[in-house]
Image (tube, rainbow, N blue to C red; front, side, top):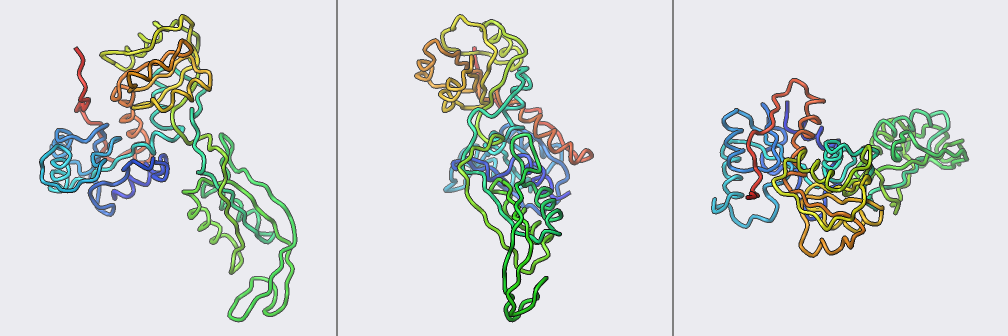
Length: 364
């Protein structure tokens, strides 16, 4: 099993192109063509986690948080990040991180958090824009089905929970083959008219090269006519946070106690109680204060996240219950998620979840 095979499975669920501009997800140390004899899954990479991997003979660590986040100007071992990098390289351990790309997918970090808290009927809280493209391909009518299917098989045509979405229009295509060509139909030097189908579909931008390679393989023409347009549509399956419904309404304090119990939080911070029962819950694992306005706009009764700033609490104004449950606590189930993603594809691969508690925050 090569390291790149493991990475491919993770990035199928959480494409690197979906990470935020400030992030540093991906393979941080090690070579993708190296053999992976096993992997250790963790939320954070620490020296203790690397020692655990060494002790278990595992040469790949899969983390949520990238240990190399800010630029390293020197690697002298003067802090834990530098020491982790040195130790990983010295022991030939590859370090891989799936961070905001795993946050920004509908089956990612926040979906796992919602599942644990019993929040159903979920959808992305703040869908991203600028990810989608309209792809148009012109193909002879008799080959439209095979080209269209090749596009769908490569990931085109997904709109929400619908797949194989396309629009098709018949028309006349014209062309004249020049010298040095091998036309599929028509003759060199003669203007030719062919009945063609215009296939329109939608793709996330990161799949464009994959889909077009599928088109080129399935299309009979020597030169394929195609267009690609950037769209401003929101992508409902990509974005930050998640919102959904509890099975039934509950009192605010009942919900807070449920959160504390399920997440194992030593301390739950929250804004003044609104005095209303709650059911519509918005969440964002980790640091999610940038989504408070979105949670309020969508009519959430509660916005639960890992970290809030002091002045964030003033934004509630009795309209919403803001809950701060801990960065580690709201993202801890990411380890389980990554385990499931890899294990489903490679059930016999040596995969373990780290036994090290990497939470650096303590409460009295």
